[in-house]
Length: 93
Image 1 (cartoon, rainbow, N blue to C red):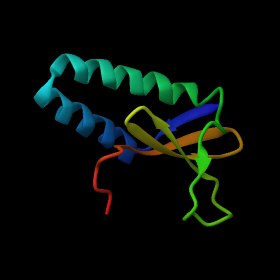
Image 2 (cartoon, rainbow, N blue to C red):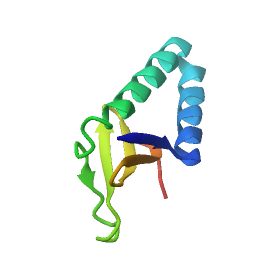
Image 3 (tube, helix red, strand yellow):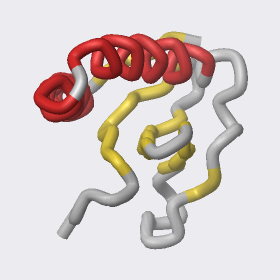
């Protein structure tokens, strides 16, 4: 299964790492690495997450929480598109 990181998800990872680095640069590096590893793990188990209730039925949109972080992704036949990554305490409105 191919893993595709959308531009929005890539920006999310950069933003999260920069925010964490202002408080703890070592933790920022560790957390960023851990997030990338766990996202890659979705290739092996793409159904680990749950369907996003507000998504249209025809859209296979899923979410999975890794610790304090949520990854939203689109599961297609031969690929996973990582759409967004955020901390669960972020205001997403």
